[in-house]
Image (tube, rainbow, N blue to C red; front, side):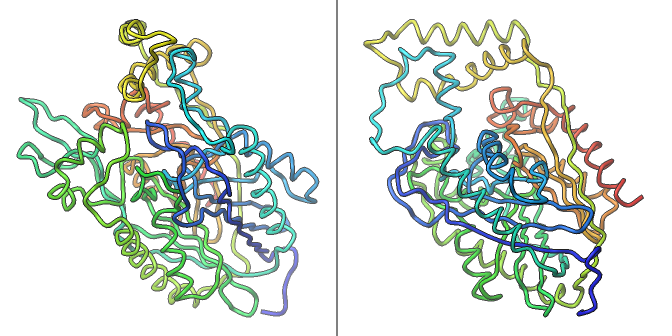
Length: 492
């Protein structure tokens, strides 16, 4: 291990930061507005640098709902003087907790103001020290740039090894119900109803791990990919990393004070709660949860749910550790590329646009500057607002463009995308990849909304309609093929 070829050996650097503001923030992820009331547990960001003489990549994961490109641009600008680092090789992804900030412009509010008019929006009572907009973006950019710089400057020779195991975390959240002669999907529907038939799609219980080691064979960090968003708490008004908080603690209890990079796999139609089990005790609350009009006190112990999820993930990580410590590779094949991808924008017809605008106008006519819209009314207009916004967007472009990072490290491949990618697409990529281990990372370097399947479009409900999607299954098929081409070419 001591006779090293410095031109080939892998260098690895880690750093992390607590990104929890000491001010209240808008909480992102629900259709209704929320302002944080307290901190349940810290939200964090972690950076991992991997580099050789010929290539490098920086993977950053944050406890957030989506990636604000404004912040990523600010991070890159702050790192322009970081010697040898190509900022185009920075990939920022999120765990998709719904109890964190966008750390930038409040997109939901901006869209509503654009379509409904600022004079009809509800008057908000917000704290004077609310952290939002440009100040929030600068705050997060400073935190992320600092950990990337530290990880880059302190990268040292080390090894890497992978392992695959299983941890039941994800459950499909789109149950299908009989409605006369039709099958209708209801996201977060009550499965205790007699009309419940099945779930629309499957779930992926794979736990993919990459372990990093120093030259003495000591574990320095672990990449953990789970195809499920961190959304047990979801609806409430606290800041929390959700199930990743107890998961990180439990992993460190078993493996020491190591760095942990959490990655969310393809999970657009997934959630960490078993609807079959919880429906029986939440027949009243599930319709309220589905409506997304306000905080709902569900009949479940959210802290205990998170603890148990953490336990299952930790068990998989520890089993993987026992395997991976015997296969440390100091000289893995290391290749990285950034793809400029372009997928067709999901279109709405002029008739759809006119119908949606009429619904909006009908509600607006009942209000004035002295009689403003209510929050519930705005949530009820989510779908038509989305159709109108899409129609305006498609006058400007017919494509959704984004960057995808594709990495080969040893026998493993990693590929990112900016979507809440339905599980099916991730499984299709994994099944046809030439890599022994394929890691899919969603919600990276952008926010492409949900990318639903053909079955989801037929079933309907939230996460399948234009208001919450930028691309349709045609785009999903193209994403699968282009990702596979990029991965498999690294084995030529």
